[in-house]
Image (cartoon, rainbow, N blue to C red):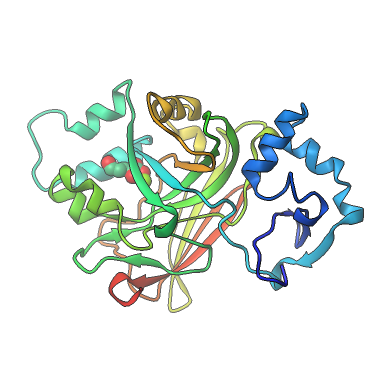
Length: 293
Ligand code: DO4
Ligand code: MG
């Protein structure tokens, strides 16, 4: 808002209705809103409708506001090898291939999914802020993923668009390097919007599109659909929450199905766009981690 405070808004077309000031206690953030709705026996969208926001709320034009990450996620976790395309890409990037099945082949089929710690609030950048590439990797890509915004009980509040920035050569050298292939300064972004879970009829029919621009020219475009997921969102959450402390507003990225051609690597100045149908479009420029504080 004009005071520089982050507020919640409802996005409809090109307009945003600011709802925090209509009910500051319930609409401080999306997790509070979902909890408040539950306490009064409503869904979040019913609570929002009851605010009569179309008549009451201050309206902003989308082009005039800066959209932040839609929830201040204390932790971001991510799933791996949940799509066939990801399994195949991992097998290609492995430096030393064993005889027979790789651990990527095995985890794709296993009951237990691959889940790893991806980011903290301080390493996650807002939409339109630069995501970083690291200085000790020659092969880096964005990973466009559907993100689940969950509460501490593992309930899905909504869906968002996410980017699991990854270093393919560091992971390919040795899988024990996974944390370094996944976690560094500004290596994660998600948002700018959350689609409330109860408004999605079929979460296994979302299109995901990734576009990468270099000097304003489209140099890569790929698409996928959540129908290609090997697993169900609730099973992934179940494993994340098992014997774990999970915080309200955690984001769980659900894996990538879009991998640029093997000769592609991100460069400083590229622009990444990740669109999830019915959810929103996340856009971030690319910067060098060494030049970013
Ligand atoms: O095994 C590495 C991680 C794979 C991943 O991040 C993905 O499939 O999205
Ligand atoms: Mg990923």
